[in-house]
Length: 182
Image 1 (cartoon, rainbow, N blue to C red):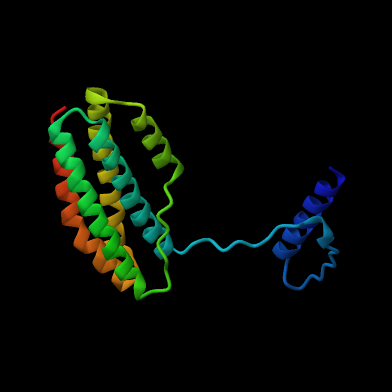
Image 2: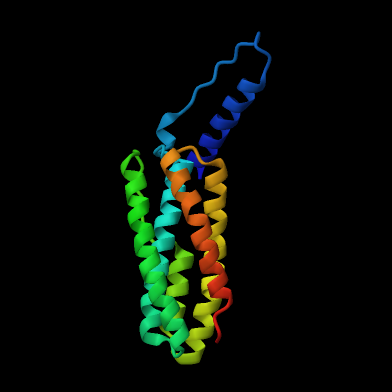
């Protein structure tokens, strides 16, 4: 506890010294042995976009594979197969776009996506159909928002072109998901 207090007081002294007039001289001794923090670089907006697109594709493919086995409705199964095909193609396009950059898309599912998959795994038949259809609407709305944002504001031309190309496709998928009969 004494170590933390010392570190906080040192940080406060530095902060106060920085706020003082430029003509003052303040001597501050900082005990650097109290901090073992490592600087971690935050991912760029481009990396975040690539990761979001990659994890979206991975989630869609995994959820659709579950639908092929757990769904009761032939319409849900048909939609699921279409999602597998479309998101496999999207993944290939993302990798091509990333190939011309220093960004490597990470398809690791988010905690939220993982929880949604786990919830779907426990369902069968009509219960699965309802949950899958509702999840598809939400997933495609989120993906569409990310694509539109990057298309308008992104910095990497290859990712901007990728996002712009996918906006009408994801819009169509969203409309199909909304029309699923369950």
